[in-house]
Image (cartoon, rainbow, N blue to C red; front, top):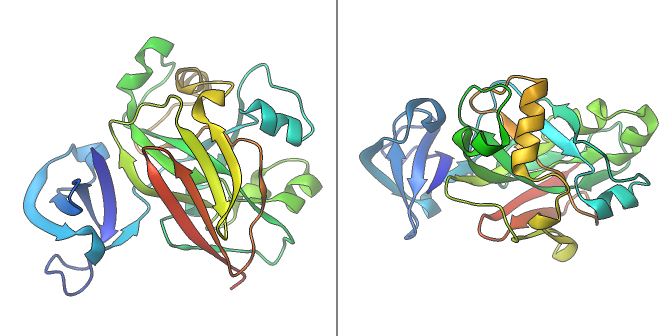
Length: 261
């Protein structure tokens, strides 16, 4: 099941406030009541075509976005590091989240802004110390993310908060897939039509069960929290005025414009 969050538009008859819905295979959205992470998936009689709406970030992280660093061996190597013995955790603020087709704004502080294509886990319930064998109990679904990074600031600061924390630096979307099962799917990043990253989700050093187990031993996870699972090799700059598309086989594509304004 694919869950979308969208702006219906003034002529839709559905009001102008953002809504959640279930996207059917025929491109029709069935409106659901409330936030499905908190209220469950309850369809209403209202429907609207996907082509008539503006998709928004499919989840509103009320608490945090947790990220895993250097989780592909080839990426660890290109960053000049070794494969870590345990997951490396850092945070992005929830104010960095934007949706499909929104604009990544290049900050004045930086001269290089990079793409990082990642599988994102959406947490569906409050949890702590989750055993590996029970991680599926706390996952609401999966989506795609771009862990946008001001690479020059990351190197300058020696830590990652500023470089990864700017507003618009966490595009998420286009929807949450509640049935997706990570395996051997292809993950890519395309900048202005040129493929820059291409790998297999199975190349992750730490897989989803290990990640959730580890993170939940460190911090309590809340409904709507998002975990970014790391990026493969091929990271590089995005061009102001261009577009960047992150994709995962079976999950779809997340495209964003890049602008200095």
